[in-house]
Image 1: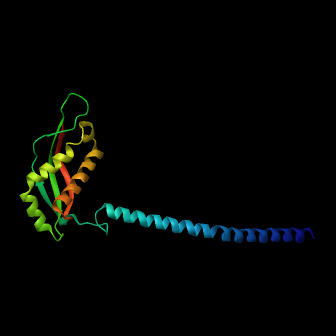
Image 2: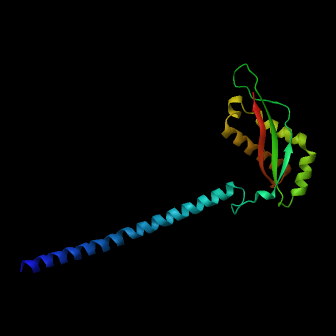
Image 3: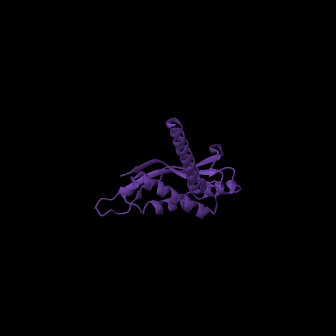
Length: 172
């Protein structure tokens, strides 16, 4: 008789456990589904932002489609005063990377060749706003590149200009 009573108690506990497990599934599954959908939506938005930062909608760009337009290292540019009595300068070379697959590539390349003084003047105006302490910071240099890129795209009214990079960047 004791053996049957223990078996009945174990069976009752198993049925109660089964009911609780079913209850847990129906309580937590809707919230887990909503959380999964939220995470998927956030990941999709982040993918879109990364694609827009890369400058293309597909997120892929073949570097073999780039043509470099290089300006020789120009005259030193006086930097903004940082409050000290010292005058600081920066000297650099500029490379403008053009997208050869763009529709206006040949027109933009011809305009760049004819307008080197205008490019130097535009970049000088942007760089001269910064102090010595700022231009030696890598993050500020990236910001300067972005400003120059936007200014050149506006100046030449083109999206053919893919990026801007410096070489021989020397600040004193």
